[in-house]
Length: 424
Image (cartoon, rainbow, N blue to C red; front, top):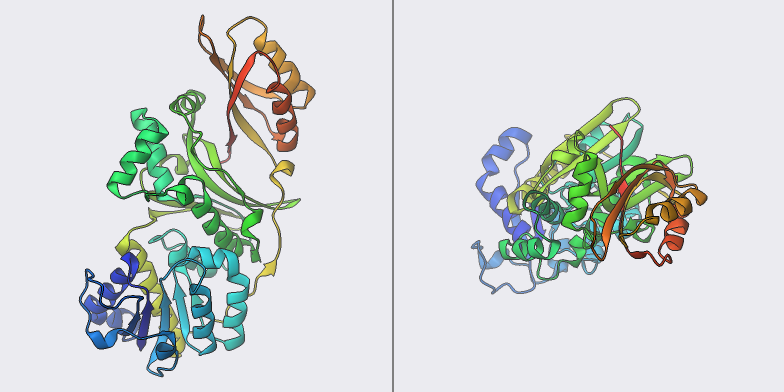
């Protein structure tokens, strides 16, 4: 079966390499013989890490769409355009599509799956979330009969590496980010990672899979890790927690919660031990209970391996060995974070004088915020940290209380407010 690859970057090279080197093994295991017939790139003359014959480079997308010997189109361009247009054209040409593009799915999944369904061709996207972790297949096949109630995960390796190094070495965010950029774990412009946008894209995909509902990216409450200080990591550990950037999707009585934010998670929770560039997703369902899927979330060959798995699945459908009707998604929206209920870590920087704790606690109480634990450190300094862990509280009430606390003369700064997950 013929395969065309759109884009020959890091993952594209990995896909072509695996399909070429492991062709016989893949055929033996799957019963489908896959051959890369065309590659579409913006500059065919660019020097690359893999050598391809000149006749393998397509002059444009139409050459691929009109080639009856190409059965599967693999979109690895990234971004929204022309990726979306190419995917739609390939589906309308009755070709199976495999993509690793989390952004295009986060924005256009409902439309893309509608096109796939109309044309009765498969659209696969295993590598779009979690890189090499087999995540999409368990959610769409192994757990197809399970009512999933929540998905919660570490789905960005860059931020997990930064928080791990900050935790083990006591280094600042800026120091570790610079190191991550030197090592190639972080981009020159790390905003998509450290501000949570990359994880938010992936969460939209996970929510669609888990709850059969597509929400808008703008519905995801998104916070990054720039404000995390080694002081916060130390206090969290004193309370028995680690700090991770979590992507959380939950079914609640009010609707779907969708949030990406730094979160305190108990040290005994499996996600607390997921370190460095590794990713993991914790799934809870009524029938199965808790499941955790863990592995490398990025990299050429882990991601390329997931793409190849999708190519094989799509090829088996086209060959008649397997059938699948592209799924439907309802259109929905997520609950405003102001309406959510949870526990929180609060770090204030305050004047070091008697009565400060009482003033702050009084305001919290007036706004229905109940304090579970307090740490008050330092003496004879210009300002000292005052740290609270709350019981469950409506975030809107907490926000009102913090607004009033921020006006107190004794409060120099509301340094951080971090969600706490007590579950498991």
